[in-house]
Image (cartoon, rainbow, N blue to C red):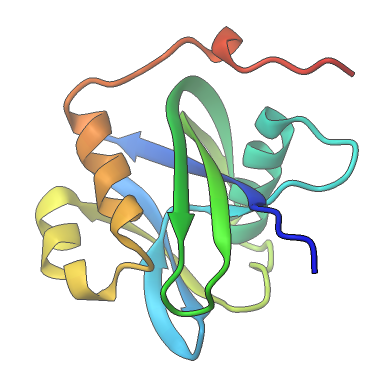
Length: 148
């Protein structure tokens, strides 16, 4: 069997001190996560981040920066993820849009509310990404490029 990491994207969307999270089903439990998902064929990382955010939250967003790359092995399923996290601001909500299967709701939470749900976060990298954003970490988008 050939091992390979699953390439994923995530988006930290902040507005007025609140963060857009998804309340989703994962490995048999309800958890909170940034809008996130797998890279599709023939798609850039930025395109994947925009698509996943819209599919999971019904929000169009504008990418404003790149937070970083994280390698994470899930203790729940043993899968290794190579997570590319973007920063974004909200542009437009589409309340009639159906959310992806497995998404219970898209919610706006402030930092204290997220800390209160720490045990319900999908992984430690959810809080880590928020704390890195709060600390001012923000790389230019041209750090990530596409050779297509």
